[in-house]
Structures are given as structure tokens and as C-alpha cells.
Length: 117
Image (cartoon, rainbow, N blue to C red):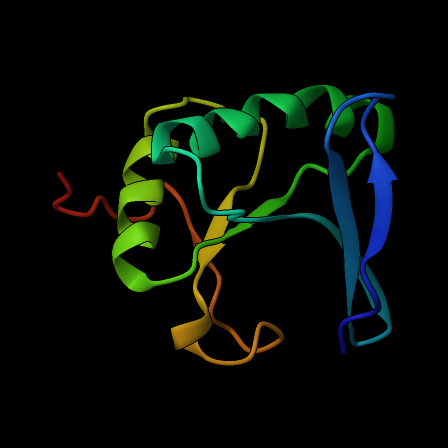
């Protein structure tokens, strides 16, 4: 079961960050949700990951989930995220073509490198 996403501002004047939690076997697993807004380059989207280490320090939540609009953009995003070297985070990606977001469709970065570019 996935609870509703809650809006959480990182800082006044900055874009909001979405927080959610997954409940499995009565245990709560919090995460940050970063949907691909479109209209920005894939490298700029991947650079958003740098906002999460300070949030992880303050909140204890160190799992950002990036959702791309399609498999090709997800592959490109994973390629860029793999090169950001943020080992203190658990970063995963998905896209709507994979299935329902509550299903096991989130792929951790660093698990395998795609052939992109």
C-alpha cells in the first residue's frame, strides 16, 4: 500500500519535493518522489539529486525515486544518475510503462549500466 504523497517544500522559493511512504508488513518506508516535469534536459533532471543529501540528513529519508515518462528517457536518466556518485542515497527510477508504481518496478541505480548514450 502506498500512502498519499505529501507536499514538502525544500526551502521557500524553491520547487516542492514530494514525500510518500510505502507500508509493507506493518513497516513504513519513506521516500522522496521526483517526477520528470518535462521541458528540462536530462542532465538537469539528474542534477536535482544533489538536493537530497541535505534532506536525508535532516529527515532520515535517503531514498529518492525518479519517474521518467518513457523507457528511453529513464535509460538516459539512469546513465546520468549513475555518474553522480551519491552513495549515501538509495536512488531508483521507473516509468509508467513498467506498471503500477506500487508494484516492484523501481530499479536501483548502479545495479547495471545501460548502453546510453
